[in-house]
Length: 451
Image (cartoon, rainbow, N blue to C red; front, side):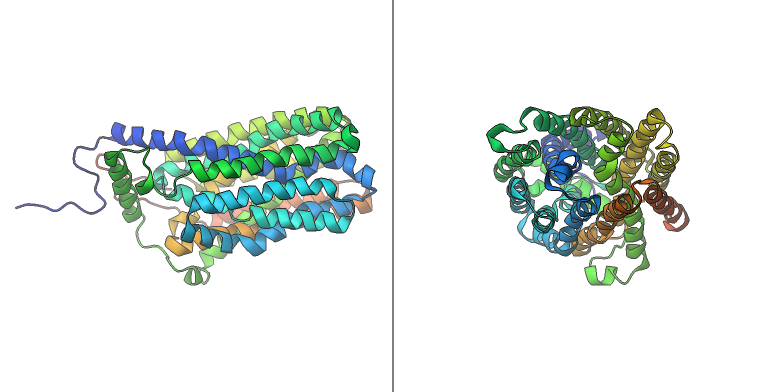
């Protein structure tokens, strides 16, 4: 009696090493380029944390003005992220990412001309509008290319680019501010916006020629390689069991709102460190923008290592709850230490700042394994964007809160206690309410593993 292979079965003769080679080829084709784009996006998003060191004095602005401007970026995210991700699903990643990258590059360049708080707020909001959809869009895009059991590594490497952006962006901004201040009548912070915005515009044009929307369109893969990936992704889809395809239906599920709350807590800490990390370094005695940049570069280099290691370790052990929860706990504990020793020990403050960056950043890539457990299709496209957009309101609120507290009290200590408490909530919510996940229908010869 003949048998018919299941539609998700790999082609006859498929060996695990062969499939590994195909995914390695995809990985090196996509991930380095996407990392470059994320580095550029992150630099254009957070360079405000470095230009603040002189911009506020030049323009006579308060910490509260800065905090609101830094955070208002995320309001643009909130309003435009879901439509952008739905558009990506409709017209493809190549067109969407090109539009986003060129838009944020031009906006960054325009920021060099801001003179009033109002135009500062407008520029930051528009930057958020253009960048909206990039991060969740890439999360969605990678699900088109990698199965669940290979995704955390891809997520981790891609997202580690934000840490590498800190490694590059800090010294770069410090060098520009110190070396070009006064050239052509422009302040150093104006040169930062100009020189860090132009590469994004160029990268957006390159995106059109380089990216491929889906594996079946990839001419740089052989026919057999495309078939292998198609079969493996179908196998992965089957192994996940029934998932929600309707975005509206997914909004009625408690799991969606649980994930939004968890990510809100993670982002509150992450954005606080992003926009106030350079300020913390300055407050312990390092006044030179270049010195601040190099210190933050070391901290973000450690953050990159943490993200990559946590993603690889999560894939290897097929576990995401503890990898995310423990990383968030490390971030919370380290922020608490910063608050306790900020005025007493510069060395301990810098060490705790580094560990806080490692913890909060390492939680992010493995967090994104969780939504894909129950979302698919349109629900995945809109749901990932919805989680990111609502949760990123913490990126609006946390820096604004810290700016107000710094303006009113002259110190960040009370605000850091609040941020640490919020990050503790992320760990508690993950470990108490996110269920373990058991995968089924693995490739032949591989055991099912639990999350």
